[in-house]
Image (cartoon, rainbow, N blue to C red; front, side, top):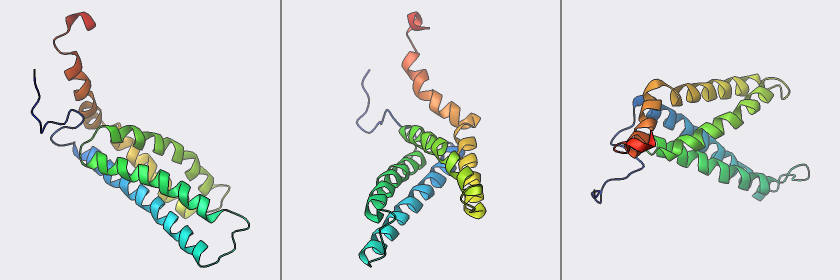
Amino acid sequence: MSQSPTHDATSSVAAPKPVRWAGALVAAEGAVAVGVAVVLVIRGLLGHDESKISGYGTAVWFAVLGGAVLAAGVGLFRAHRWGRTIAVVAQILLLPVAWALLTDSHQPVFGAILAVAVIAILVLLFSPPATRWMAQQYASDTTGQPGDR
């Protein structure tokens, strides 16, 4: 069976609304991280004291990870299933960050905002429409193969 050249095996025509909403939120997280990278570079270029942290190194870290999260969010919004894995891993890694902001860092406003976003994204990505959408890819792999079940 041949596929048409315009068919992308990793995406469907449209992702369900929860996936698109999650994609928008994940893209916003990534954009914030890339924005932090830009601010850190500008601070370094303006000559702020860098003796306690490496502003440029931290900026590279935020740019790389934030860029990946931003790409995952855009991918989800555009119905690419690969974005879900990156988004879920990022949210799991951000849960302890939100907790630290709420407690040890004494930044409850930022911690609460991050915690609400992380939990909302996870709920959206594991909602029934989102899991059905993800399962569609695997269902097409097993059809017509009775020995594999």
